[in-house]
Length: 626
Image (cartoon, rainbow, N blue to C red; front, side, top):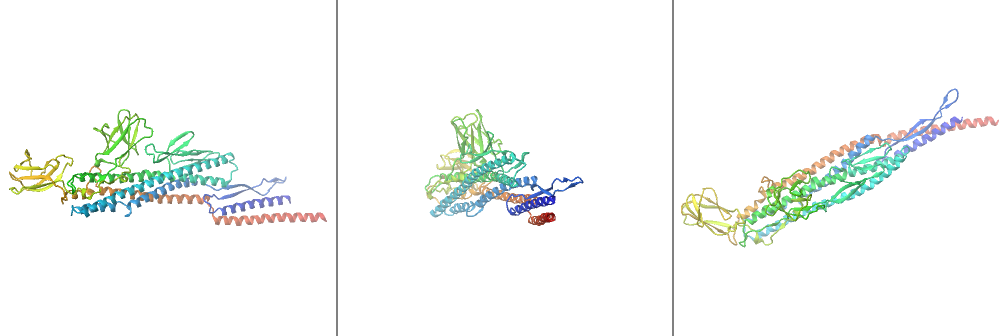
């Protein structure tokens, strides 16, 4: 009778706890990261009655957390990569929208400026046409600045994101380390909910840094970045620190402090949201800003060269139409020498947007790409007469460099924010060819003036009057000097100009070349200025400015689409990993309902056993009482 009562009581308690566990599962069906729990029942040790063993019922052996470490690891890694891909996709799409939208992009104002310049050719002396050129030029430079400022704002967002993410990683890491300490101190009696709490924190951390977690024998979890750096080991967490770039103080970089050592983290060291921010900055933001600057410098430099080859309405040679910022050169924070480097664009066709690190080894300079470390050809000694030349940029070294000193050359980064219109007076637009030619009326040959072009606007004798007289059909003199050989179809060159003749001159024929003068309606230079956007000025004379703009918009759009595709693909992989995890650890309400019904029936049966034991005891008391 006592055995019956004890067995019933034990069963009642066991099924009560089983029902409580089912209720706990149902209550947490929507709790993120919750792992369902299951009561493990086992038989009590039987009693030897002499004639055999009699069972003593059931007991709760364990409340087991249902989890698959492999499924959890796969979900963890997928989550970190998804966070990285989504961060990159979101930011890249913003840059794509900035350049592709008609309201904010470059194409519209670019076309307006060159349309106005082309329109000037029909009436070069028109004040209204000249005002249109200046107004559209200012709109174009304002758009360059606007785009550059927007990219600067995105760079500041990246800095803020890295700072806030580092703070969050440090907070989560400290909490994981604390939980590891609690769990490892008594691994055999750990709350299942505590393990779930730690897993959620690890998932959050990996969402920021990428990587994975490895379980140790004492139950603790060690967390590592995607680059293999330890963030949490046992009950000790490393700390992400924020520092400024040694070349660019406005830029934030991350390092990992742990065990008294500091590890500089590069783009491959971290995944997750932080990795997405760093990938965006390296793969999308920096290239876009540098290429935008290269286009701005290309436009300004090419336009200035042609504008200097023209003459304005005042009869003066053209000056720079645009103000062009010089390439940036920044010394490393740890430089010990007194050297400074002054840069200028030397050859526009060789100008590249890629940043270059210049290093002095005590005797000579070397150049490497800042992103890959690959060697870049470098010539010159650094003097004013023999400057250092790298990727079309000339650098003059001032002061004394020390062994190991390094400098970062940014040929075009940020240049779009510094371009501006250099002239305010519309009369100073150099629309005319500075020199003009005419044939004498009494010439007897068929030679006629074809075209006059400026070949060297810096020639001191460019505007000096010149008389050309032909000795015969194959020889001529210039202001009495010569004779020079004339080849039909080939231009006559002198004093920085080039004269082409149509027809065949005869002996005694004369031609004169002189200054166009003030107030001219000549449109020779305006025609050349209107064609600047189609001139192949970049990439060794193979890419036009129009082509560069199209290439920039296409490359940004391609990067955004690729990032979007990668995020979509990773979302599918993450969903699959989540489904695999939920199939093991997730709460199934149908299954829990069945378990609840089963345990409820078992609980009622156990209560009936106790009731039966009570009836037996009452019967015995009644029998004894008689």
